[in-house]
Length: 311
Image (cartoon, rainbow, N blue to C red; front, side):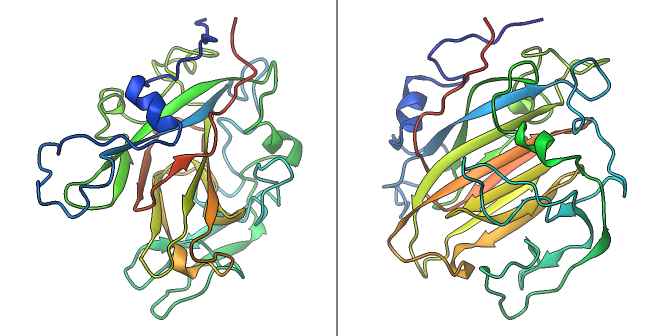
């Protein structure tokens, strides 16, 4: 069993990464493929965001969490409405039910997947209706068990800081984190940040498949400028903007995408600063995919704390 280290350094962060994690952009000379007449050259080349990863044991081993390595009652798939529309008093996702299996994705006029309907997200011309089952799907177990996903619980999970770096794409204001091209994760065959750490790798293999990850960031809303956030991956992912769920990718499934156009959100006011909270869960073998694409200039709200570190 390997130990998480209780040092102040962020996993995967250089000195420049720590500066960026504190909310400061890291610029520099144009990268290869980045034109010197780039109209977005004033933007930092990278955004490094500091979050918290929590390791869990799968349900079949002693001390395992019942939601990890779980097969939903209605089968592996994207499930919607597992969490409430608003965060709880601790700023964490709150349990609504065990999820409804999505049988057809909701889409926008550009054929991008969008979240199932919510009253604070405006519909647009060209949107295509999706569909879900009406019976609950058993994608997770109970409210008490969901509460442990994103909280430090001694004996149930172990946590440590983890940074991810979003890279500005050539001659654009779009930032991307992609496990397939990131220098570290490309060598690991996916988003596997804690192989050999925490409780150790999943039984029978060289990878750790059972963990959650969260980011607490903020940005300034600029109405009419086309601000957008897209996630592609698995398993469960929830994104909350201004305290409301805007990306809802619950369930145990292969990689699925969802996009939110911020101008659809009726609770946002031009020029105001809003939190964007990102919650990820990897709950099942054999893949772990994570791709973030956005033109938001995200910054950390504060350096996250971890209280369940190994000795």
